[in-house]
Image (cartoon, rainbow, N blue to C red):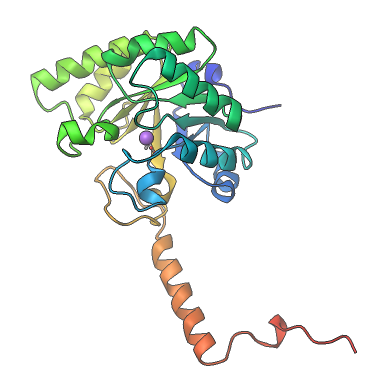
Length: 267
Ligand code: KIV
Ligand code: NA
């Protein structure tokens, strides 16, 4: 029995909450796989793994390399890979070509792309030609330069109306589900009731059909900033610091390596 399919995720609308995490590497994918319905190879890897300021610099080659890495560690979860900035906005044909590269070169199940009503036509083009698409509306990190920063949305009537139009357009575009990032609870609840496909929230309240977090955030491994919506399930960053400190002390004191770590000639 193979991985969970995008079609199966689609069928989970209104049922048990859909469990999703973003992950970027084989060992992390192996650890998370059994517990998740969907793993996302997110372009957040630019910031989390590579120290970039924004996700705007992430390339298709980076997404392919990490998509391949995650696929090597997954047996159960559905795997979606983010289309990076610049790989899909220009035309639906360019979007199709690059989505096919992600599917063919990584073996993933679906792609994700950011955008509201303006991207609905592209999503329809892809999904009617065999590419499963996960939508992403609300706070869209790839638009940081035009938005002037990262800010949750839906605080004004104008913003709420725009998000309603986006949700409606993506919900009927053929996307199998839609990520909603950074919006207020009342609107998230309304959008979840309004759209026919599952909503997967990040900073979008418990009213969504599923939840997603970045694994490094929820593990306390990435601490550059912690948005309000992240719950820390562990503090691995502190544990790594402590381990490095212990190692350095023992090496300097010639306590490591000990006899049990040392090869002896077998006479
Ligand atoms: O890049 C990412 O990790 C994401 C999710 C957090 C939704 O887009
Ligand atoms: Na992303």
